Image 1 (cartoon, helix red, strand yellow):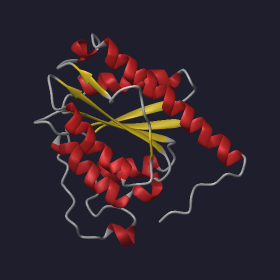
Image 2 (tube, one colour):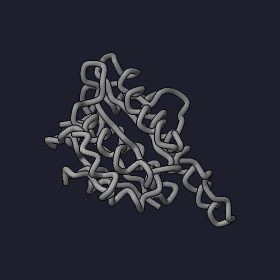
Image 3 (tube, helix red, strand yellow):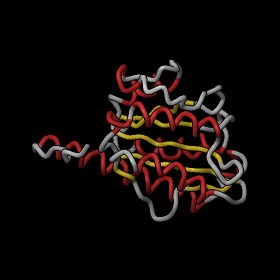
Length: 197
């Protein structure tokens, strides 16, 4: 079992990476592996609405979006992470998500997913809501925690001081592991997914 994560920060090992790693290390306690793909330093084009994905099954712009989609087909869950920029997710992850969810949402259907955000001071609920829209429109199973999935800290070191944030990340990892394993049990027992469009 494996969870594929997205680091939407331009800083490879910054606060977002640290939050994702906290989740990943908790998942490993439940025998679930994880991989973090770093998209925050890529020049990711937004969707150009060419609709070629509807016939080819992949994005016309052949970059990390197609790479993620291929890896994601065999994964059991997803975590999408971003720092907060001007009370929103970063431009890189926004362009990434626009294209990924246009071309790949059928293959991600009914898989557990979660978004997380890291803020220096404020704007986290706006960015968190923005990322959750992709999950909600795609028949994915949104993973909860005991509070909104956000951490406070400008740097990786700051994030590690956010005790409540760490607890939130660990709890959402536990919930994700539980949902992934429940889904596997359902499949073994012949309980399929709903027949939605």
